[in-house]
Each structure stands twice: as C-alpha cells, then as structure tokens.
Image (cartoon, rainbow, N blue to C red; front, side):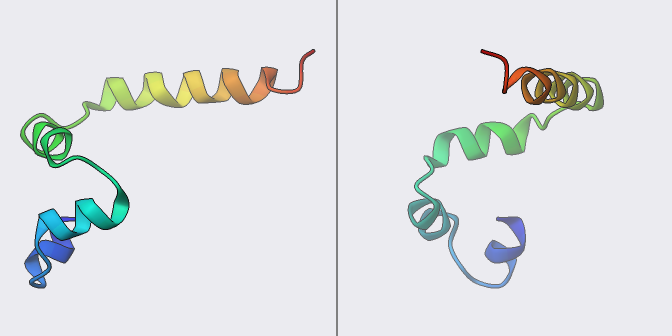
Length: 55
C-alpha cells in the first residue's frame, strides 16, 4: 500500500478496493509484525496445513 500511496493513489481508495478498514492498516503501519511473530505465524500455518486433511 505504501508504494501505491507514493505513486499518488490515496490509502483510502486502496483500502476500499481491497475491502480493508483504514484503522487496522494504520495500526499495523505504526506497529509492524516482529520477526518472532512472523516465525510463530509460519509455524501455525505449517501445523494447519499438515492437519487440514485430517478427518
């Protein structure tokens, strides 16, 4: 989104097209995901994928 805003497309328009709220975007922008949170998310996703086909 930052690249779009730099090219002149307002964040409001981008959020509307993507059906996102502006508030969570600005919250994320002020406090981005830490590397440890990213590792945790990858692990959770791997577990989910591994057990997705389980009955």
